[in-house]
Image 1 (tube, rainbow, N blue to C red):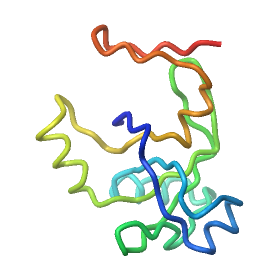
Image 2: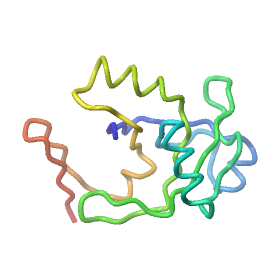
Image 3: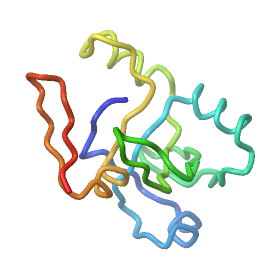
Image 4: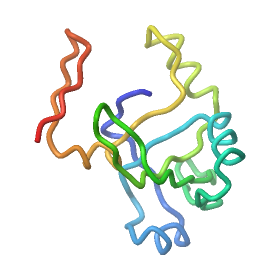
Length: 127
């Protein structure tokens, strides 16, 4: 996952109502191929069809009940589907490993306080 504290989405009216959120929200993203795997593996996870209207296109949102970051379990977290090519380009040009998604502020805020130590490749979650 890419650490993307500035990731955002523009919710459709239906998504705003279902999630009880404003139009512009912090978001997380996941590649279309992983989105489909999750959809098939966990059919009980809610999906909001066309819930994101960013870039003038409709994208589906999947609500993951909980995720684990280090020792912390948190959720639910909404992930917007993005074309695989978005992550392939970032992976090949900017990263040393393959990326499948971006973890954004809608998940990170639940950690309250954390330190990103890039030099030591560490994320420290503080109480």
